[in-house]
Length: 292
Ligand SMILES: [Zn+2]
Image (cartoon, rainbow, N blue to C red; front, top):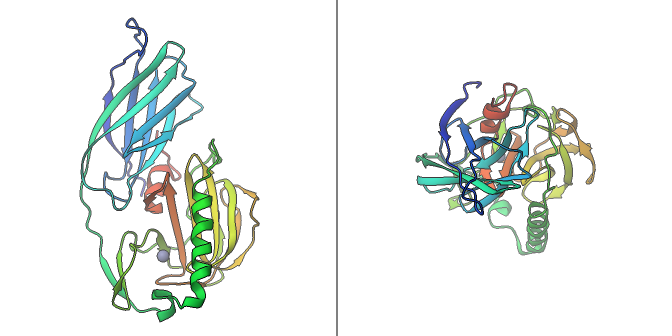
């Protein structure tokens, strides 16, 4: 799990937007488990002068980088599980007093085939009864509002950790056919935990949801800042309140089996600026031996 690979290390050229004499540079190193749908990519940039802001634009999304203690800047970008394979270019921009310097990093997203699984659940979770529609709509609006408003700075400061000591299955990205009907792909990792196991915050952040929703059952959502969120679903008990701040390792509830459970009972989903990524890829690149 600690085999972090550096997939590209491109020294980049500098362009001072306003000043032709600019000789500032941005060098960016890209690290990931692989460049495939569902993976988290870590961009680490060295800028020759002190920037006020660094941003990475990729897949049509602009991500704000955060400074590391050693002066480098880091941005986390997710390859959504439905991202089309093919060539892409990441643009790194650093705002300097002399203008904006930028560098381009080309790379190729390679295809990944996700399994299809056939599941049988209570029919009410496949085609919910009319009596539940209003509630499902309300849940959807609530989630949309939450994911649209992440903190403008990083709320975590240590390695990511697994919420439970139990192994995850490999169901991330699986195309599910529920009772014969195709539904959204499975956008999280399921952990084979016994019921009642304490669930820990994978990293620091602010609790933006701690309530029961139709599909997820009792759910806790943590805003890690800069567009990154963890969702921990199907809990039997919630031990935090909306608005609380948590640190990595704080217990946020217990493994349950509430809501539409389709596998092992703990579901951890991670989104980064809306991209659905495998949380296990985050543990690989930002776990106990974080990207250098
Ligand atoms: Zn799941």
